[in-house]
Length: 277
Length: 310
Ligand SMILES: Cc1ncc(C[n+]2csc(CCOP(=O)(O)OP(=O)(O)O)c2C)c(N)n1
Image (cartoon, rainbow over all chains, first blue to last red; front, side, top):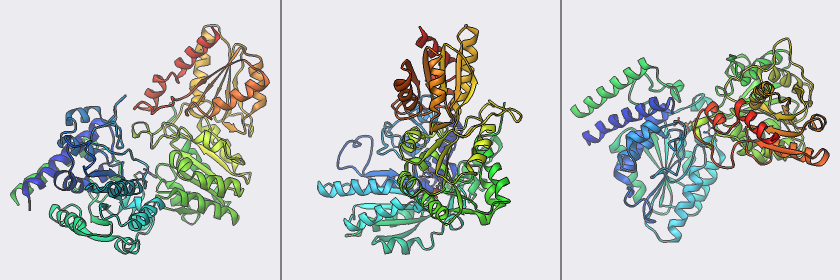
């Protein structure tokens, strides 16, 4: 296990919370659940950086659950696409390009999103194009579990299978919550793995808040030939502080000052613990 | 300052009426909180249907329920309801003539910094272009109540757009003149006619007050019924004015401005100026900041009126 990386995930969470506080709102629950997935992709897995951001051979990422944009902005800042201070200061402010969903006038953001269920079909298009041009690009798309209720997701799933897109990897942030509550109460998902299998996808299960588990899952996705892969990543919504963990109300709750202080304390403690593991 | 958003009033009316009318069904797409409909779901779980994040399903299921005699109210953010499920609205609701009431919440730019994916500035144009679809944008909470009560009396499709934030009152408990499909005349004047809809009615009224101080008299029409547009009112008050201004929280194309311009152009030609959001992404900001920036607050509208009358 990479202690430093784990500790870093707490730093990034603090940055993300600060961005939300600066902007006066954000999707904190989903930001926290997806943090390790984004970090594994941007720091380890993907061939992407400010230097090659226009290279057609780069890897592509689409944040289909676009509402959880603050952790994405944080990671792109740490990757060097722009300064974290700038993004934090401008987030959701009057006239800003750093809005509450991915905005592709910002360096590093490939596609605009925000309306759920769009990312997978677009990713299929990117993956088909890479095949057509014989480019080595891999395409990654992150979706929420609640998002999977959109029919367009399954239309994309059909075509990913139909075109044997083994350069395509979808990740489901399986935190079991959406706005109105538990996903199984709002609209049953049953066994996600079975559903994706039935659509012809190679399915890998992972602990989405654990770097080792994610590393293995992405390696398996890369190695699997002939089908697209979906990683069903079990996560904890609001991961990092008991104040917000597994609480539906924290989908887009803005922490009070008191909550903010407690969250930052918990994240500091998490970082310490990671370093001492 | 009023603290009750129009969407909350819709829930109140539906809760009251659903007690005696068991055919009323409310449908949400992981949107009951945003629609202020959690109270309805809690009070009448047997008259509530949750479909998850699936707006096309939302409208399709509503059409099926309506076909079987229910009175469905499908509530979802206006942006998704009017674009994602546009074809269901067109085919399953309007074309098949099912009694579905489509409630578009947080319309226009209510979602502010969440950006274009969440703004609905095409809904008036899209929905109005569908035959057999009616389009309503109530201006304040009192009118919202009257409108929903009236819509419960008929069995035809309708799209109702409300904003997210509370809007300042225009009417009151005692005084809220309302006739279905007739614009409400807020003031009468002879210099300029201002036709506004939805949340833009209040600033239009404020503009008229500002103009009065400068000796300019304005008619203000609350055109909550964008479709069917109250043509007679437009013609009557345009004829007695030198120019016409329209105000809407919408794209400059295909909305209230386009429709009023058609009527004025055909029946009583005079200058028409459309005040609307730009044909580009809308600047990031709160509704208040954005309206001010684009001259859609009382002062901005008054300024445009003076320019038009020059
Ligand atoms: C098409 C569409 N419908 C509704 C919404 C409003 N919305 C934003 S986030 C959200 C819940 C998302 O839940 P999930 O996909 O599980 O994401 P997570 O829990 O990871 O935040 C909803 C309904 C939207 N953004 N797009």
